[in-house]
Image 1 (cartoon, rainbow, N blue to C red):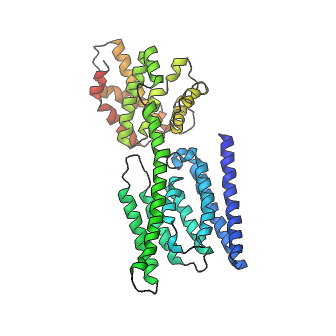
Image 2: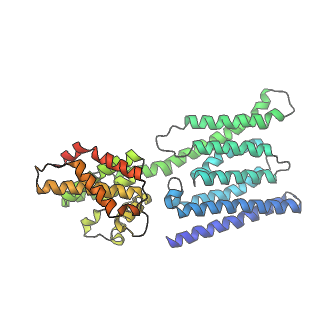
Image 3: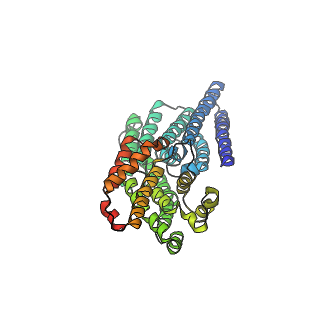
Length: 400
């Protein structure tokens, strides 16, 4: 991991230098004055420096700093950003009415996060405008506003997200801005020919956007969902083997997963990773292993998603002096409740259990022992967890 981080840091530094060299060379090639060459180079390097700062800041926040699985695939943004440096320079050679920046803003945001995507997109539009023969603030405003609106609309995409209205609003915004900032200022009579440029721009953006969204949905969003659907199945080979060898552990995992998923769905946590952790954090019992370094190969060999492996590592290692996630606490509380009920039922099958009182005792003990200090949880979320667990009394009776 450390080696990979050094590689990514080296690439970030390379982007900074690459941007300066490309813009410097392009400015010289276009016959800009020495003052303009110096300005363009400095501005472009400041833009990339800002983006690199935002990337490093996102890295410090781990996978929550990036959208989707971008934390584990930082190089795809680096490569696309490098390509965009060249494209932003080349765009200055064609009329600005044909720039497909609206779609490119969306790609930059989906390959990083919205903050980084918007900052990058704004920077590239600035570079294109600076390199133009007669660049103006009108085109800068036009493409920045359209790009920001589109990036905001396409954030948090899911497999079942309806994108039709998002595409329609984005394209409508682009067309309106083209008319307001460009078409109205052309000294020509309104005619069909005057509408060709906005139409071509619309088609460029639509083709790029739809092609990218299809690939992104297939290789990023759907791939992760398919992995979870396979391994979060109670008939997955590992769980099936656990059921055959140790039924107590199997049912403990199944019941924990049910409760944990209920909490995660109710509070908007990562329910797929929570369910996965509930199922597999004790799978090492199959091989008489409990330490992380011993069980990690089990997860990697079965193609567990990286975010799932990260949560499992957090749960199993349970590192001290580090703030653990809400998802981790969700599994801890759910398993504690299930283990307590199973223990009491095993001791006396006809025992009358006051579930509310039992759950209150579990939560009060966690608070008294100061365990909450180690989790990234608010008091409101913690209270909601307690309420959700108390609502499952019928399910607890099923455990008998």
